[in-house]
Image (tube, rainbow, N blue to C red; front, side):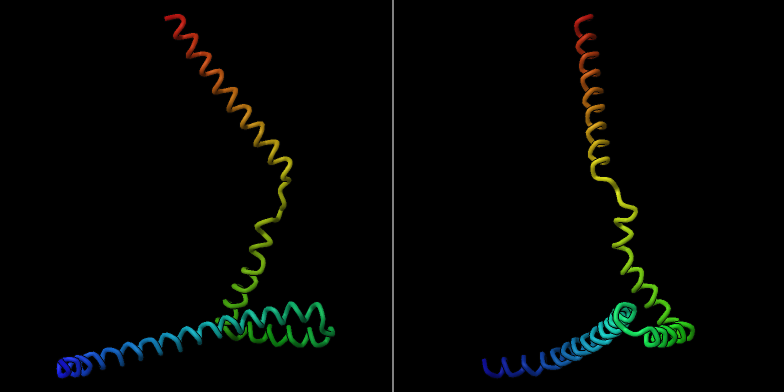
Length: 132
């Protein structure tokens, strides 16, 4: 039995080594992509932070650097667009704001009209049965 286990280990080892290499490569790729996106998120946070807390000349210099990078890099354009889209999409979901009271009133009115329609249909069916 020991010889069988030893031969099984010899056969399985290359597959395990190859699987480990695949997992390592995936980890390296996923880490690089994650760092890439995290850097753009951090950059966007810095730009937003610069407006709120940094002096005007520092903010101007930071935005000038961003404008130059934006002009030269397609990747940076895509990342900037994506970042600001992700920042503003939740805001646009609630804007323009709806009036919850008006929505509730409209919903109640629709429900009342629907119930009236159902009642009228049932009365018509009852009258048809009584005539027949």
